[in-house]
Length: 163
Ligand code: FE
Ligand code: FE
Ligand code: MG
Image (cartoon, rainbow, N blue to C red; front, top):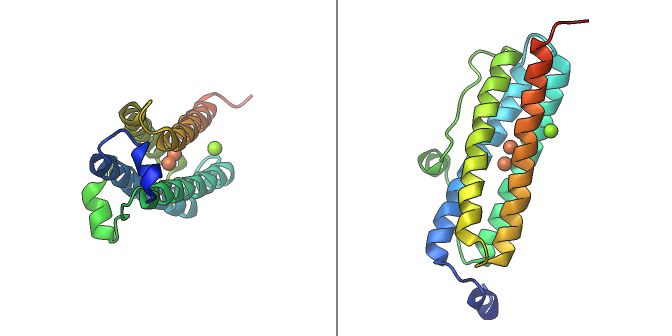
């Protein structure tokens, strides 16, 4: 990265890159979990839930893109293999073996809650020390909070009796 751009980063860049790559691994797995979930979904409110899962998939992929752009600026390399992604992930992957919409929502809520924790600690790591990464991480954290909210609201809708 540019010399001056590097000078203004006041954290251990190697350590930061490791944390960012771990979050990057989570984003790819979240992307796939949402994407494949949207395809196999069955049961109540299938249409609307599949649509939401597909939208979230796109947003997770966008998060991966935001992270990778910054990692490259910082002189890093994104994880290059699926094996590395599975090894480095914080939040893991839950296969939608039971494609019922209620089950899919529960699995993805769990994923979002892990993502919120991940980005909160990443935010604490860079806060006041790397303004650019801080801005990116905050933007992603806002999306993850919205994702959790969206999914929990849909799960609540499913539980409330039909009027
Ligand atoms: Fe994400
Ligand atoms: Fe998310
Ligand atoms: Mg949404």
